[in-house]
Length: 263
Ligand code: ADP
Image 1: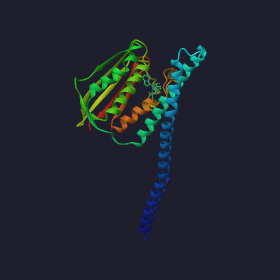
Image 2: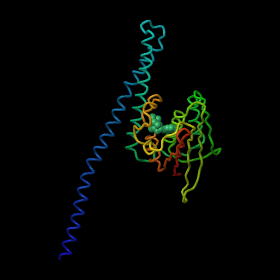
Image 3: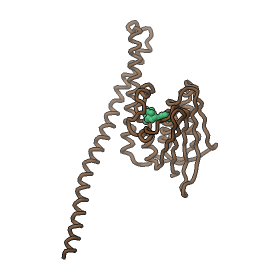
Image 4: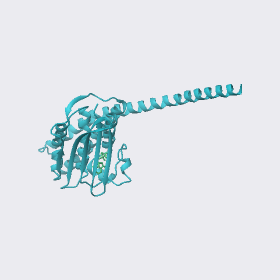
C-alpha cells in the first residue's frame, strides 16, 4: 500500500509540476510575441515619417539658390540628415529582427550560384572599399550551385563584408572565400570574410552577436552602427540551420566563417 501511495504521489506531483510549468510558459510566450509585434509595428510606422523627413531635408539641400538657407542652416541640415538616415537604418534593422524572430522557417529555397551572388555583393560595396583604398578579393570555385534562401544569404554577406570594410583602416584588405565540403556525410558550403582590420578583444568576442552590443561605443558612433548587424547575421544563420564562428586578433584582423548545410 505504501509503495502504491508513493507511486500515486509521484504521478500526481509530476502532473502538477507539468501543469504549472505550462501555465508559466504560456503567458511568457504571449508576452514575447506581443513585444515582437509591438517592435515590428513601431518600426514599420516610423518608416513613413522618416522617409518624409529625409525627402524634405534633401529638397532644402538641393535648393542651393534658396536665400533663406544660410551656411549655418546648411550645416544643421547635414547633421539632421545624418541622424534621420541613422534612425532609418535602425528602424529597418529592428523590423528585420522582429520579423526573423517570428519566422522560424527556412524561407524560399532556390538554386543559385554562390559565386555570382558574392560577386554582386562585392560590386555593391566596392565604392565603400575604394574610398578607403581597401582591396577586396574573392576566392571561389568558378561556379558553386547551392540551394538556399538567396535573399537572406545576400543580406548575410552584405552585413559581414560591410563590417569588414568599416572596421579595417585605409589600405587594408578584405578577403572573401567560398568553399564546399562534407561533414559526417552532410554536404555544406562555407563563406569566410577575413579582414586586416582593428580586430576584436577576446573578452568582447562572446558578446558581439548580442543585440545592441557595440565593442567601442564612441567608435561605432562614428561608423554609424547600432550593434544590430551581427545579431541579424546570427538569426539568418540559425534559421538556415548553420553556424557562424569568429576568430580575431587585436590590431591584426578578424575572420567570420559561416557554415551552411546543403538543404
Ligand atoms: P555595428 O552596427 O556596431 O557594426 P554589429 O552587430 O555589426 O554592429 O557588430 C557588433 C560589434 O562587433 C561592432 O560594434 C564592432 O565592435 C565588432 N565588429 C564586428 N565586425 C567586426 C570586424 N570585422 N572587425 C572588428 N570589429 C568588428
